[in-house]
Each structure stands twice: as structure tokens, then as C-alpha cells.
Image 1 (tube, helix red, strand yellow):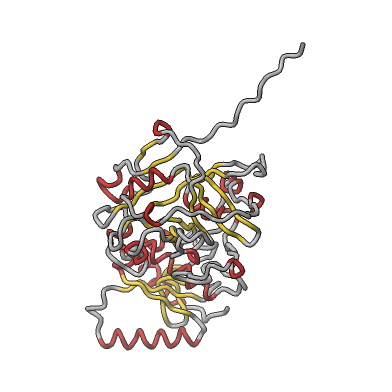
Image 2: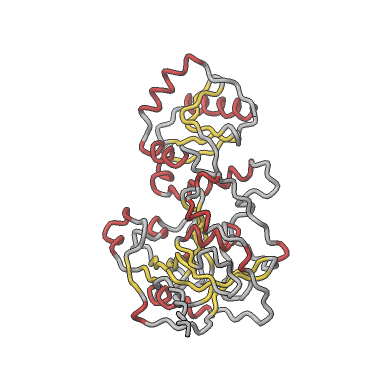
Length: 370
């Protein structure tokens, strides 16, 4: 897409704006810069014709504006904004707006929405985040694969090794036996601990994937400053206030999905984050690691994305959890602080992460020649 080049006279103004970004603009720019969102380039304080926009993605013809609270906006300012929007729309540019509070208080939600807006403007026949919200259709014939628009430079060697294929998929002939809703309606800490050793199952067009849960984190109520619900009841967190046993899938850093299972009684927002899995099945390729650590890698392996948000994990279709009687001894369970929540103050020190140590393969028996 071609756009009118910004006026050269605006260059000093653009430089001044870049040096005096608001805290919200600085925070958002830290996540947009460096091709962090689907490998796309963003420009800040970019000139388009007679106007300067906050952030611009030329490949997707997308402008992102970060606004104030709007209370002090004058009639003249509103009029100029409308003229600018009319001009940008005439060039085929899409505009999305977020206010300072949204960026500062719900950055993950803003990044998730930006990724969704990017997917709408993608020319790919199967962009990621093709559908939003709750998916009630359990038919696997409508399973949509995800195409990740992410350059390989974002993946370390270890991450590339964990980009598993569906070679671990197995055909299933027995009847699904998912954990009942009452299992998830209990206190979140108890659910998180007892999920260790349970088997998470994902249905795919080729069969099913089975993996033992080995790492889980609890997020409990509005008072928990690390819990998304601490920011209030929003469109994003609505699923957490609903019945237990439903999936809560969200995006972090604009590129990694996280899978949670809602817990407790309705109206009490809580969930368990699945942080680690251990692949089951004897046909797993020996050259690939059997353990998957990290919620982003878990979702990439399972091919879970926002289309799987709001699934009922107690009905035994698409995605569910079963008890296969795998033994977990209490002394095996490690209780640790949760990861990546330094912003949560004293709540960051809660020992609400439960995990099992990595399994060690049996040593081969040495045979002494006679």
C-alpha cells in the first residue's frame, strides 16, 4: 500500500514528539518496536500527508492512536480529528484508538486487540485469530489451522526444538471421560495442585494429542493483584466470572497464547494457568524433548489460540482433561512463586505455582560380556 509521504517540515515536530512521548505511548511502543507483533514493522510519530499519527504499520495500513481521557478536548480538536480520520480513510488506512488508561491498565488486552485488528487486514487466507469470543461449535470438521506470521529470528534454538509437529497425534477409539465440573468448582489452589498428573487432551483433525500436566499456576479472585480480574469485570475477563470448567485463553506480548481453566463458583473470578506438559505416547520422536515448559510453548504445541476461548472442558470435545490414574506423590510436588508478575507486589511472593520435576529416562542396564 502506498501513502502520501509526510511533509518534510514536520520532521522537527516528529522528533520532538518522539522525545516527549506520554507514559502510555512509551509503554505501547516498547511492545510494538522491533517486529515484536507478528514480525511487522511499526513506526512512531509517523507523518502521512499533512498529519502525524502516533503509530503506523505500513504493511497492514494500520494507524494506532493513544488518546487522553477526552475530557479536555475542544470542539476545534474534535473537528480536526474528524478531518484527519477522513483523510486517512480515503487512503485505505484503518485507525484504532485506545486511551491512556487502557494501555497502562490493560496492556495485554490492548496488544490482543491490535493483533486481532492486524488479522482482519491480513491478506492471508487463514490469518491467526480468525474468530473471537466463545466458540460453541464442537465439530472438529470446522477446526481452523493457525498460520503464525512470526519470523524465525524470534525463536531461539530451544524454542525451535519445542515447535512440535503433530507426530505425537494418536487416534482415539474409546469414549472421552473428562473431569466433571465439580472438580473445577473447588478452591483454586486445590484444583491447581490436583491437576498435576492429569492428562490434557486436544482433538485435532488427525486425531488427539495427550499430555500430562506438570506445571500449573493459580490465580484467585479480584484481590489477587496478579489475576486479570483484579482490574475489574471486562469483556476480556468475563469468562472468569462464569461457570467453572471453561477455558480462558488470552494473548500476551501480542504473540503468545496462554491456556487457563476457570475455577470456583460463578461470580468469583479464578482460574488455573497451564504452564507445563509432558507428552505421552511411545511414538514420540526421540530427538524432540518430551517436556514442554512455558504457557506460550504449551499453546503452540497444542495449536490453541483465541478461537478456543470459552470452550466447555467438561464435555469431552475439542479440549478436555482426564484422570488416567498417573501417580503423583505429595513429596514430588514443588510449590513456587508464580512467574512474570513482579508488578503484583506482595502477591508475587505467593507460593501458588505447583509443578513436578522433569522425568528422567530409565538408565540402560549395562551388560558385562562373559
